[in-house]
Amino acid sequence: MFDSKEYRVRMENEATHFDAEMKKVRTGRAHPDMLGALKVEVYGQYVPLNQAANVVAADATMLVVTPFDPNNIAKISAAIRADSTLGLNPADDGRVIRVPIPPLTEERRKEIVKSASSEVEKAKVVFRNVREDARKEIKGAELPEDVRKKAEKEMDDMTKEFSERIDKAFEAKSAEIMKL
Image 1 (cartoon, rainbow, N blue to C red):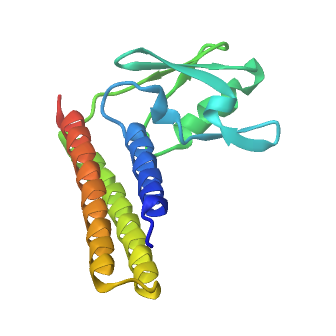
Image 2: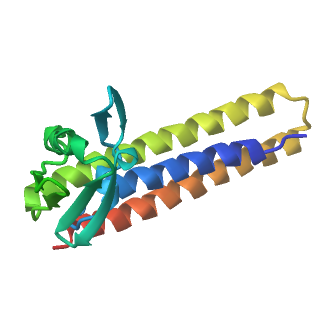
């Protein structure tokens, strides 16, 4: 008998990963997850920013980064400045780093939506690959024809369900990005 639970879990994991990636996409409002992917060199090794500092949104246009060790403030500030995808210019006062979030231009908003759409396509490719793996298992199993057809339809429906979920999340994120 064919069990689709394993494939549902794989698709769910990809959907969760997609949601996490969408949280990192800049929308014009300050959000601590904007700096979530940033790696900072502290004590001779690279670590995620959240392991070297506390990041909070002071308001809609300002992030405040408080390093756990004030000696790392220059390295953290340099790492934020060096990430060209963010386009941010942090300023530090010796204790905290203030990162003003400049308003996005219409052109930049469109670029962000376009780059976010590539994440949609990556997720859909994963869904199709999972479906293909399931089809291989179905074909390899000794199943009656009606059970095989039902299992294939179940996988097609599951792929469609997750693809629509990703599309809805992307539409919402696009609207958020394009909103002034």
